[in-house]
Image (cartoon, rainbow, N blue to C red):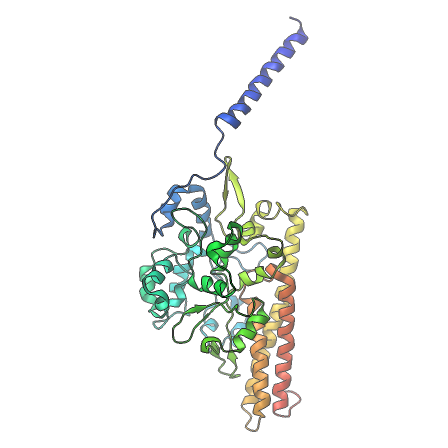
Length: 427
């Protein structure tokens, strides 16, 4: 055998071994591409028990314990006071517990702990506050319907052994996605949507929307209500509140300006629902819980965090602009929204100050003062709607920049009305 023949024999031998390994790898010992179903008992709320059956999901879920700033500097999971960056919070929420304690959310695994430690919570706090903090809300509602909402929060906290976890979003027997927040189910029902008949792709947003939404407590019962009967834009929700639904008039009355104020809650689902991603069929989970693979096993990451921390898995399946370009786009959007949000908040604070001065003048025109307070109420709602959300406008930057512009305009009009009420050019 000559040298060329020997080389060819060795080469063919190596190729046979190489392709043999591939064949064995692909067909003989191929890892499963989907998870094996492991049913659990109904009422099992301990995520560690779920983790024994679904270790990859559980390991990623545990990453929510990590506390870190956002890649763009907005939001994040470090427990800092928002007023450190937005001192106007002290003025705009004066007379409300949010002026005393308004921290960044640390994430699902800290939901119960942070609720217990919040200075906004006291001995008279109602059980409604626990609705989105634990899977035990399923048990509370089964036992007493909305009656749990009026029970002392301290009693329900003692019964809640685990924070937001697997059972909030998954049926323990089938692992199908589900919604357990009765307020969300009722709100969707009033829109003619039966969440029990929703597609899996719809549920990949509904499970998030059941908590990441605006709400209020019904006077007397403390029932949690989502204000979507006229629509889910901030403007439509304001019109809903203007009709004093279920006797609800305000969250608090500002002690200086005497303005009845609406306190917005994290309207992330509503932002997304009216934004470009929802319009193109992109769910919350597609971005915040992307599919990833580990040793050939495909699963959804349960590290519910900024898509910027995993751009390749969260964004690149749809976008082709490169990770640097995507990051810069998000950063620019959030910078712009932040600048306008901060300006809007300062203008709202100024309006409180001017209206308070006008209100202390004996012969002030009360009709014009009432108009000034209504304009301020709207201005604060529009500012707070954006400020209370978690995306710094990225879920729907067009809507949020427009809403902040409205807030600034309404604040100026409120100040003008207050000045007119006392015949002054400037108070």
